[in-house]
Length: 196
Image (cartoon, rainbow, N blue to C red):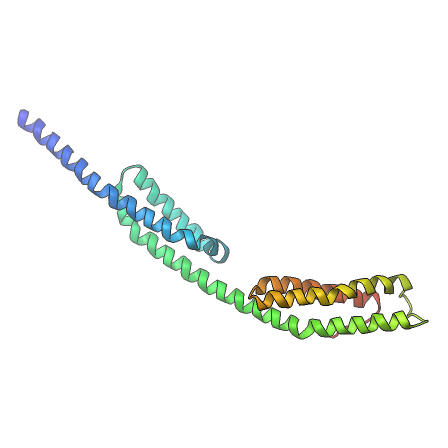
């Protein structure tokens, strides 16, 4: 009887020792994964949301195993979680590159069109200010309002160009798109057809 009790106690001790020996590596593995996700989290959320959600689910499952002291189960998940992190990072990288290419292309189109539009509306507004007869549907007040807008366009465009020179292409596109819209608004107000 004593021998049986001793055997059971020895088995329990060995099991606890084995658990303890797995605890630290399992916790370290999870901490390593968290540390790897930290610097790329924003990029994953933005460019690979589906893959990032799957990664979160897998990390939650691994953490649940740690919390329930299933250290072996947590260690078995390590490879799967790291594979999902690699897949999510790859998907985010590809999507980001695609977005960057699209933004650069959009900036090139704006750069080709906007300066000419600014010049066209400026020339037209100046001509209307000097004219005694305005086109039908265009009032003197409209021309004066347009003049104040036109006076701001070059400065706004220069701001967009400065953003592009700092490699803040997203900002440059936003600013350039706003200038393009304002040019179009002025052109419509003074009956000027801008090139497409």
